[in-house]
Image 1 (cartoon, one colour):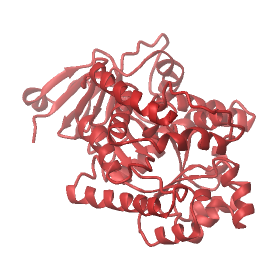
Image 2: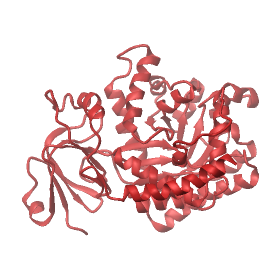
Image 3: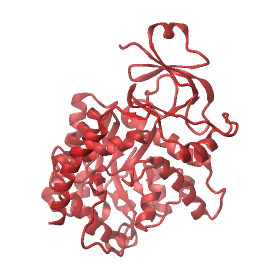
Image 4: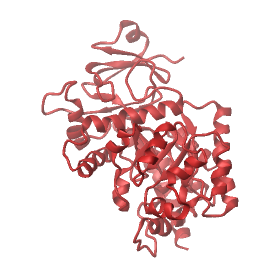
Length: 445
């Protein structure tokens, strides 16, 4: 066991919707929070451990992202031709399905590492990724684990998005990649830092025979559901049932499954999701960008479904999705009070942390003894009084508006310290550019 690390002289927000707010700090032992204190640390810790002073900075739990696409990292600045999509399916066909086919091992590695550095700079300590690289399936999840968990130091949940759009041989490889990665994790006993789900692209790209085969694999799924009309009305026309009903027919809506988007679902779908104890993860920025509609959070909650927040690979700053979620729900509810800050933090802080705690087997998302030591700091000077009753307002209208994280600690290790990455950003970006240039050339071929 390493000597404890003491963080003192911080304004501590313990997390969640109704967290405590006080001046004090925490004691970290190895990868966990060992003690939380008000005022000064207990003498026995002060004597034996190293001490880091906060000088009045904010200390709070690290952010989380429950649905992203790391493989999209090399799309930044990329132009594809032709690109004149008139609907969501054409966006997939003209951009994302063209891009994912060209990824090789080096592209995957640097997409993961660059994405990890972006997350770190934005205070994201853990994430759930949905990967696709049909020309490089085998071992792809281990490559992402290497770059994002082993090298960068984040906690990550990985899955490969199985699809029949490239033929049955690729389908079989994808299923084996998901299953094999989980077996690999169990052998290495690294579940505190990484885990896996059974990845599926979307029901409309999966044949009945594939769903039937996956039904025999007892793993929670990570799948796109009813994001666009292709998995909504057109899916009903093709199969005579909704995407949720079709997945449920094969027993695939499971406890702790992650169902991304769910924009075009009905009450019957919602009751299936609730009865199977699955989660919906919403991605409002991406939904608006793709013009597919917006989720209705209060409707999901009326069906007693827990709701998570992701970004669908649209950037790395999850606080932008937090802001978009609040504003979008004011729009869909046609009310400035139909979805408030407490509702926002219930999604982004409490329910995100709930699913990730289950998947990692260690509680995260609060500053409390026994929780994983995943923490961020902000150097925020409030211009108006700040206390426990109004910290949520200061976070949304002040910290999110003016500050970026100064420090990120994951599992007791600094990944960002005093605003500087521990890893060499410039060197990594220089190497990534070389691979990205080659990748762009292949995409245009």
